[in-house]
Length: 188
Figure 1 (cartoon, rainbow, N blue to C red):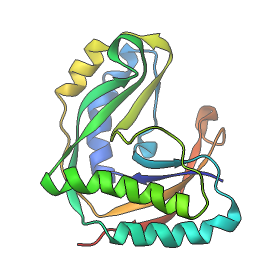
Figure 2: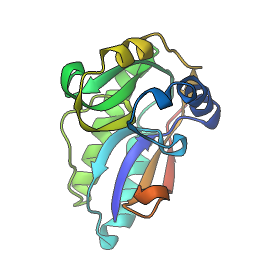
Figure 3: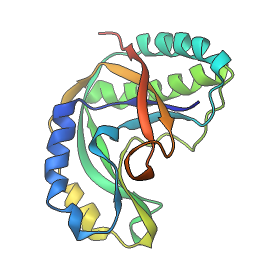
């Protein structure tokens, strides 16, 4: 199973961002992420063996319970690898004081839980973001990043993380289909 551990914003937060982007999407031929798939990836797990799933779920539950809930808002923007040669357009997170500490620790805990369960973790260092669009070829996106820098969505309490299975090619237009396997509560 291909999966990831993520912070998933609530529907009203996603709807606010979607309304902001809706009138602007036609201005660029990007592959926009569907609103229902917007999330902050804490750990990417390219291959989770079925025999490892129970232990992974147990360890993720413990890792989440060690972290405290915090407040976040979707805000700002950026591009990977950079604005001059962008392949990915993203928006960031504005975090309250506890969140600045808790979110990186939450990502480290999710990665450690996967590793200790025998599940390889892929990806580079953790950089919190929500992928909005992918570009077919590198492009200059300074205007888009400036536009996103002016955006700030509603705040919400991050009180859970989710283990999400991803099924490549099974979603609309050949995109991945995502399915929540389990949610884990953070401590209050």
